[in-house]
Amino acid sequence: MRLGVLLTEVLLPVSQPRDLAYLVSADVRAAVATAVATLEWHGAVVTEALRQLDQANTAAWNAVRAAGPTEDEWRLVQRKTDISRGWEAAYRLVSTLDPPGQGRPAD
Image (tube, rainbow, N blue to C red; front, side):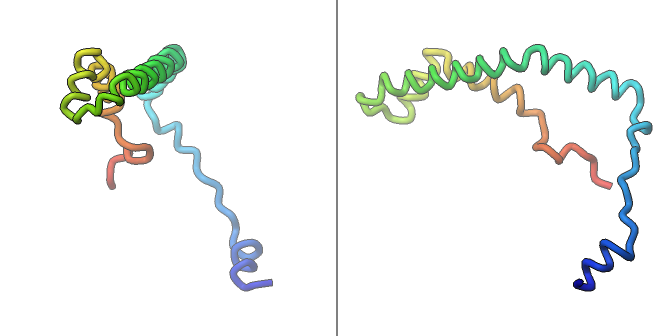
């Protein structure tokens, strides 16, 4: 048996993580419950809207692709068809969020 395995599995006790959830206030727990309920209730609808927007974006691109649009012309198509408005709304949903794991304040 290797020494490292011996030390970690036999000699050193395995510590369990402490349950510190009791330190989280009732206000924070209520906010989490509200957020989770809202996401569970509306999440599927938002996901479907994003899927439809993506499909519409692809269909619009396929419709104009043969004309060889410039980037400016493509942006104009997106503005006139409200595709850009849809993407802006989608980006607003997540623009204020930190990437996963980044929400904890530094010590």
